[in-house]
Structure formats: structure tokens, C-alpha cells
Image (cartoon, rainbow, N blue to C red; front, side, top):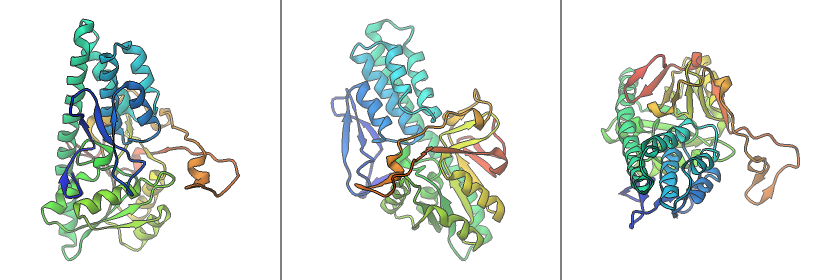
Length: 336
């Protein structure tokens, strides 16, 4: 997508091909900083400390991290376990590591690093193609919504950052909006702030870079906007969809789904097949990442409370609240 008017991707190889460059998302939206990852330990740290984030993107970063580990002569299984432990909830992380490990396990050791790097490249390229396909299927939803009210923009509410900063390019839930904007379909996005990490600011940064109209709102404003008839649909991404269709996504997603159901607003979840986890029966079986309390208790350098803090990073939206799943294969009423 566009960054300062120039097409870019959120991850790319370094000039010598031995490492990768990623946007340090801790600096966004205030400053654009590229950092180089050249070993598995740094890749794991970047995932754990959220230099980089988003289920598809951390899968790609982990894949390259495992390739770098093999180039350094590290043990395959040890490096894989270290990277897998960086963040436990997003299924793409484990999927990508399995893909690389399966591609090299039966190869002689001198051939493993090159094969791992090739598989990581393929994972990144596939992610772009998947997101573009998701975008085309989601665009059909936006066209239908606009046909019902042709005199005004389609208003979409979005939680967290399911955009190109969370993938390699296009994003999942943002891809339909980018394609709609590019074809001249009027769209407007209500952007949840998404506390405590404020990933909504990243969505706003993206949308501004591409010229998509948007308004930044507090997390608690979404229900009110739905009651006022100002939301035509909710689009979200996801870090994992379980076998029964439950959706594990950034904390606060469940409340948006409840508000959407109460107000008759369609609630769509955009995901590639890599985010579907048929091995996990329901959302109750998903490990929910508990992050440090300072993310909530601190605003910048200022501590706002000394109270005990619990900080779950994700919640689960039951499948019964999902209108449809936008996948690379089309819109599905059910998944699995």
C-alpha cells in the first residue's frame, strides 16, 4: 500500500538478502522507522515486544526468523520453539513456523537455510495474494451496501488494525475498503482507538496514507454510533478462528459484535485460511495472551493508577454473532 505516496510493504528483504526490514510500529504514527532483523533472537523479540504485530505479519517475520536461525547453524526445533513462544494466541505464527520446518526437515543441513528462506518468501507472497482476494470478495459487500443507500458513503466500523501494517500488504479487513476507494465507491471508516495499545492509530495512519475518509473514535463510542444509524457494517480481522467459527481477536471485539447484533448491523470477519484453526474446537480452548499491566496503568511516562491490573490482549466472539467470514475463497456464512 502507500506510505508517503510510495507503494511499500510492511516487510521486505535487506539489500544483501540475509535479513529483513520491518517498520518499527512502536514509533508509528509519529515517526516512520525501519529496523533490520538479522537473527532469530531479534525476530522473536520484535514479535514479543510488538515492534511488529498482526497475525499474518508475525507469521511472516517468524518464518524469516527461522530461516535466519538455520543460516546461523542453530538447531531447527530449538529455534522454532523460541519463535513460537513469542506470542501464543495468533495461529499464523505456529502455522508459518510449521511450514518452514516441514520444508527443510528432511533436507541435508547445508541445504536447509536456502530452502527455509525460499519458503519464507513464498509465505510473504502468498499473504499478499490472499489479502487481495479477500479484498475483492469484501468489495462486493460494500457495493451492495452502497446500492441500498446510494446518496451517501458506506460507513464501516473497524476495531484494531487489520491493515497492511498487520500483514505483508493490503490487510485483511482493510483490503475491501482500499479497493472500494480506488474504484471510486464512497466509503468512510469509524476507527476504534483500540486501547491499550492504540492500534486504531495505526489504522488511521494507513487510511490517511491511502486517502480513505475516516474518523477516529473512542472504543466505547461504537455502540452509540450504531444506535444512531451511523454504521452500515462492522469489519474486523482476527488472530484465530476455531473449528466452530468462534473468533479470537483484539480485546473489545466481542463488545462490538454484541452492539452490532443488538442494532441489526452486519458483523464481518476477514481472514485468510492461515488464520483458521480446525485443530482447536472452540474459542474457549484458545490461549489468551495476558500482557503486562503497565500497558494499562501507564499513559506515556505517567502512571495513572496503582491498582492491580489485568490485561488480556484478546477476547472471543461467538460464531453466532458473526454475519459472515470474508475469505480468499469468498463470503461464508459458516466456516469449518
